[in-house]
Image 1 (tube, each protein chain N blue to C red):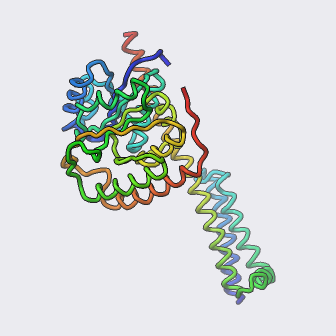
Image 2: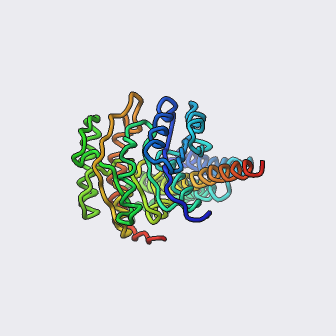
Image 3: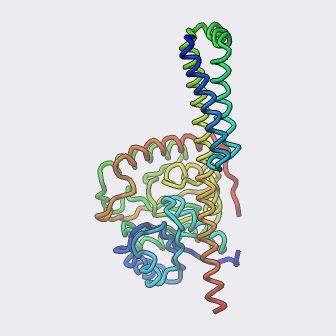
Length: 240
Length: 117
């Protein structure tokens, strides 16, 4: 650990060359002093080069590991380097960087350990695919029930985390594929505070989503199983 | 059990055991993963060579002898498959952690390289 630092912006990326530059520029405009880390999950295009040229630090996996593992590499880096908080957003431009300061606020003030940017909390009007909307609604109900608080968008990857939350997310049990409702329930059971903030989100760009074809069916199965299994596991300990 | 079937079962048992030993010899199969397959080959051999055991197991389960053999064979294979699924899950986790470590170490090395150069 290299002393206590401020905030790290983690952007997991896979083949995002056409979009990553704009996302980094938007982050720089909205969070001037934050360090930007792009974790490249073995992109086949020049995502890494563009991210570096735009001023971000880049970590590149030696082969494709999955979205969850890519995020976790960022978490491990943040923990190792002593960052006190972290905010994550997707590299496809779906998340509006103007909301970054609002997401980070409660974490910086110690009011919350996890702040979720929710597209279904009354801000803006999200025009996403129907399957995604139904899935979000279904898992929002499940996560709310198990976490015993209202969660409207458990599938949102637009999040801010405190150091305690980062430490828990570095454990082996963190999913390598989709860290959504199951992770939130796990963090809540560990005694962490979860907060939601309404954000605008853009529809996914014209590239295949990570939820397509049979992977949508697997996602529903996996999320139900892992969310219910989280309830049977021991509670994770808070780490400072 | 007709003689032809017994001879075939014996041949399969012996063949499986020889194949497993040969795979270990050629370093295609690690010793620790050969145990269950050798055990399977040995079981087939014993059941084919000593038919009263099959009859006893069939009587114990109130099942016909053919169904008994199939039943035990399937149960055994299901457990072998499950055993390997657990192993693969563990290996996947280890590979992920190693890859993450390599990624973080490479970043650390290039940082030191920049500060020294």
